[in-house]
Length: 403
Image (cartoon, rainbow, N blue to C red; front, top):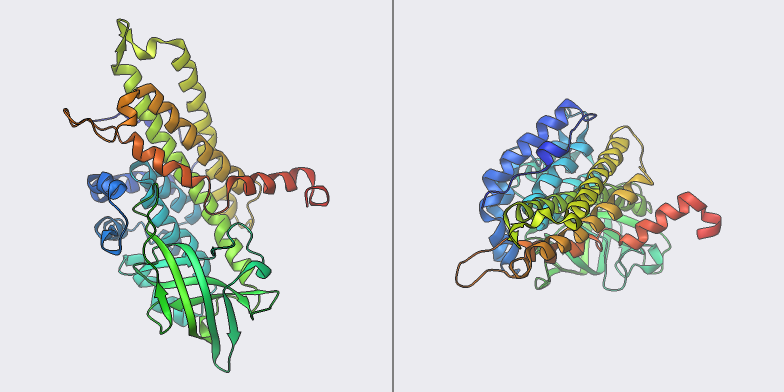
């Protein structure tokens, strides 16, 4: 079923750099070529190491989409990767999550790597030959990443560190070769390191893939570390400053997830509009009902606001604002909430057809149940939306009052 993109006649990239406008077109073409033909399969099959979508992953890499953060000729790399994340999420939110880890979170940590590590690893990341992971979350800590909460720790040795602990919900872990990992500096320490760990190292065990409601192409699993030796040169940034490295990456990741939310919301809006135009009730198009006219007009306006928010936050980072707050928090919370709202309304517009995975007799499917399953996690990971609201409130009201 061919669905017209309302974005193409409702949204105008008036203030975007020419390079970003061109990149959007290139990303959309790459997604159509490598991801769209397999996106529904990715979204529905159960998670396993064998189900990782290497074909789409490496196809997008082959078209240069993984190289954006490392391309010195790109003036606005953060804006470029976020725009690409939006285009990927339009077809597959879970693949946008994979892209976020590979091309936003990990590059932000590799910026603190030694030149030797950088030269060794970046080519494999850019080509898609190697998948990478980013690990902060643990069974007992997620949004709160203070060192005292971390149960994964690193003891310093003569030539590096020995790491013990467990990380949870780690994207790409079942197929990744390397992970950027936040660890406590000493078992009872009050500071943290960010380390780069070779996942083939002795003592590393990757858990069984998690079986999730949605985002099934974004395969996650625990990483268990038992007396894993890490060379000193694998320290990312300064000793004890790992939290700063992690937070820098997460700010970027949140903007990327906000962009993914926009992609999901755009897909839901397009499906809803198509249904309003083509479904007849009581002798006239469903779109003739004023309730849905006004509701979709409202959602289209909110979608434009969400897109502008992530673009502004990304451009702030590209301009050298290391925090990009409060825009980054706003972009993440607003864009992902809108995705959930719009998918829910698109299902309501489609009725039972929107609720069905597939109609048995006709084979019809409108992918809304997949979008619905996928959208919820966007409000949770990389900083729950409640945390984003708190970040905004602290800036708005003041930390002396909010804490």
